[in-house]
Image 1 (cartoon, rainbow, N blue to C red):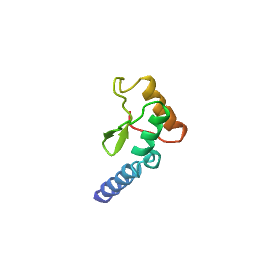
Image 2: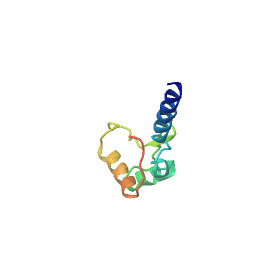
Image 3: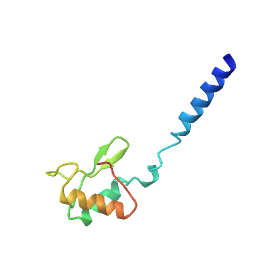
Image 4: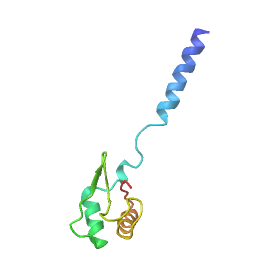
Length: 87
């Protein structure tokens, strides 16, 4: 009985850790420079991305964080390059 409990515990641990191997999107995150360049292409010169944890966000002053024409343009531009930023 004790052995089967240990086996179940080990298997449960293996299953749970297998789900969190790493961040699959880590290589696709846009750098600060890439966001600044995308903003310039969208008509937002001298843009300063917002630090969001270990990533960057492209919040445009005066727009809602989740929607706005310039912000939408920046995120779409990054997406077209296979990159993403926090929103």
